[in-house]
Every structure is written in structure tokens, then in C-alpha cells.
Length: 159
Image 1 (cartoon, rainbow, N blue to C red):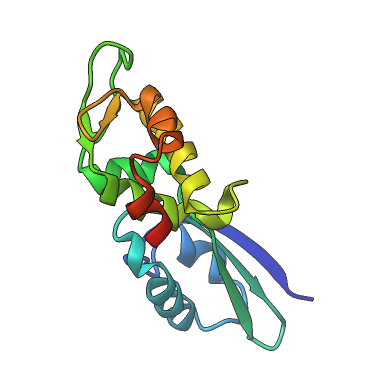
Image 2 (tube, helix red, strand yellow):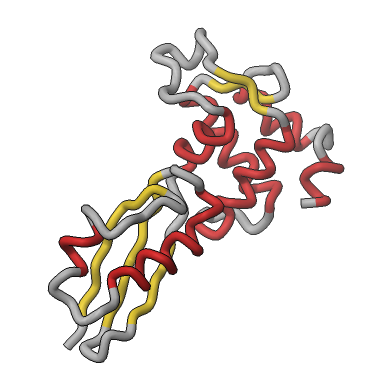
């Protein structure tokens, strides 16, 4: 009778210590093998907290399911800031390029309701509004209309 363990680990930086070690210690799995596989699968999220589910069986076999970090965490990581604006409508903490937006949208696309990168980019822009992040030097609230007007067709259709 196996089990399931759900933890948050820093992408590419999991180790046998907490939170993984204490959870995996009593199980029949090779803890170092689990840690190594998690690090391989989460390397792209370098340091960002990533939800991971480890499902194991009594024979020591295991499967790892890596989730996608929250959109806000991806935006913060991409732009290199710690906290959003306390007044996101008036004070902006960073400016995101369309290329950075596409990067985050592609990372988050599997977890979103959007069908394509264009839709995912609009959802990421919504998160930018609440964080106080501008897009291409303008308020993120105007991004949706700019996309509808075709301003970013080259970047969003190539993605």
C-alpha cells in the first residue's frame, strides 16, 4: 500500500532535508533518487517554489508530478523583485517586456484555462495588474486591448 506526498520545493534545489526527507524517510523509496529526479524536472524554475507530488508504491517505485508555480511567483522571478506594489494602480514595481510575458505565459499555459499563448498572455497580464507591473512601459490594464488591436501579433503567434 503506497502513498502520496505533496510538498513545495525550490526549483532545481530540492535536497534530502525538510520538507522532503522527513516525509520520504519512512517510505520504501530511495530518497536521493527522488530528490535527483525532482531537481531534474524542476530545474527550469530555478529557486522558485514549485508544487511537487510524489506517489510511491510498496516496492520502492515512485512517480513525480511537478506542478507549475503561481503566476505571481513566475512574474516576480522573471523580473527579479520580491514583493508587488502596495498600491498597484498608482505605484509600479517593474516593467515587463513582451518577450518576458510570453516566457511566463508559456510556462503557465498548461495550468490556465487559455487555449493558446495569446490567451495565456492576457491572463498573465491580469496578474501584472495586481502586482503593479507595467507591460512594455504601459499600464497592464491596457494590454488586453493592445493584443486585440494586433499590436503583439508577431510575438504571440510565433509562440
